[in-house]
Length: 252
Image (cartoon, rainbow, N blue to C red):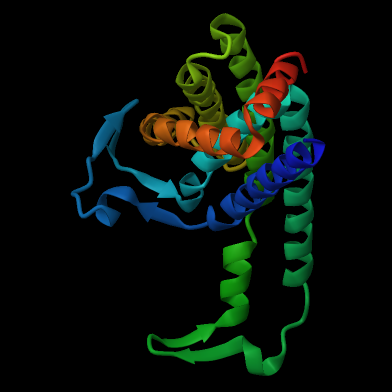
């Protein structure tokens, strides 16, 4: 029984950390959600700023998965499990950025710098530095937002669980995700662009609202996935071990 619970924590933790790190690094790409779906840009107007569309960081594809994993880990391993993995993930993300910045400082081989592509010559050194060399404030904002979001998620999750008990998984999981994602959406923008880049506060708020609208609908859309994962885990653990872990998690 202990082997099964340890193996489950390892699998959930590894997937959680892998998605968190990947979200940080693919987040450098900004994509148009509407054009990706074959739709016309919505051109919203918020806080006096016009033509706002769903131009999102690619990281939003993975962050909902991270927060789902947070809720699943919370369900079976409690606050301590989530906090341990959250701080571990933050430490590894910081380590990954340090290694990336070290690799940027390396002198490139002459034959590697310029590469011929169907679109013309590509300066590989410039491309590498541009893609991976995110600004310090963006890194700080992202890490702070991640940790705050995780701590808020686990707190709200256990608040709802104290009210609902073992029922209404959708309420505690989706509810905690919606609250934590709201805070995450604005913290990262405030630190990275209001403090770090001097953006107007209204612009930061407008972009934050657009980002949160997307995250809100994704969180609701992915709610059935929670039940699927929960079902698979319960089958793997067996009723006795599953109930034991959930009971212990509620007290951690």
